[in-house]
Image 1 (cartoon, helix red, strand yellow):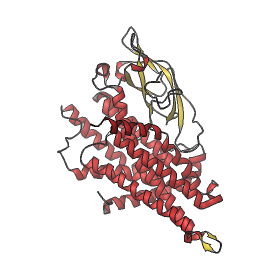
Image 2 (tube, rainbow, N blue to C red):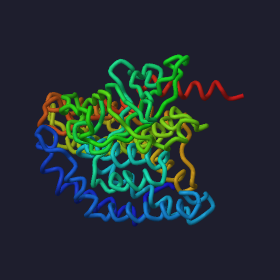
Image 3 (cartoon, rainbow, N blue to C red):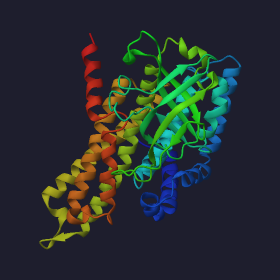
Image 4 (cartoon, one colour):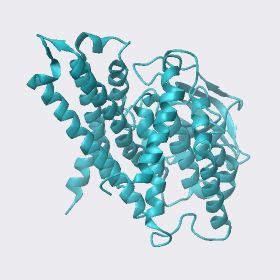
Length: 414
């Protein structure tokens, strides 16, 4: 894929009109008020039939599973164009939302993407029917809880959240999670922890995934935390004090305890999906930053001339356009992989995230520089874009973690 199709452009324009009509006028309240983003996201889903499409895809997947067929078609089944269009349809709203409100993408992506995908990839058919569909349609809000206060980038090794089995065969969960997107409002939580195993080093214990519902005894969800950017994406902490779970809440059921594919591997797959999606987020931020910078460069007059006539400003604008082109090509790469029925490898997803995050931050900060003192003021959009872009270098693995993943992959090749 080398360019958007006419159909894709029509969809993009329709989504852009929705964002400009429903989100842009309410941005102040979404960013700095007490309005969670979920109602407007649900309205977007209903407006474009995204909820109905999700129901149809989910129904087809469950029917295949119950018939004993693979839950997903084989690579050579069906049309690659359909898979590519489906991928494009999921990425276009991300790009358009990020032009104005990247935080909403994070809130949506963690619920519809990470949380639902974890259940769909690791859950039993019954668990998928019980929890996944409501997340896919945004009827319920989801959280994917892996990060802990002391673990940082050492997500698995430093993990202290635990599950112990009691005499009745049930599980008792304890632990604290932080920086959890949607945490304050989540209806459904995928809680990642370690199984208590005697004689096994805590760093090497098995990773398990449990599905929790808001309101369970012993589960506390904090209020939203204050943070540098992504104000429209509620972030909080989770506290578990002897939360009791039956095997029905263990993703994969009893089979998860003896599965060949570990919980670590499953989480890496989720990270790959999250990291590849950063390219679309970065593209939206860069497109808007460039658009605003071009407008300002034509209107702002210094020393008797529009600043766009000065070569130093022209260089900044040219570098922004190069970044935009590169990011768009990375998005097209994601769509092409989906069309071919394959996902990005872990190292490639890490490389994509590393470049995309750095490009978004560089372009947004250069937009602030072009605006000068005005760019530092919250009245101007570039100030928000610069704050929002920074987190792309931190969540889903810091830049340093991406570099390590890429280098390990390179060094492992013969």
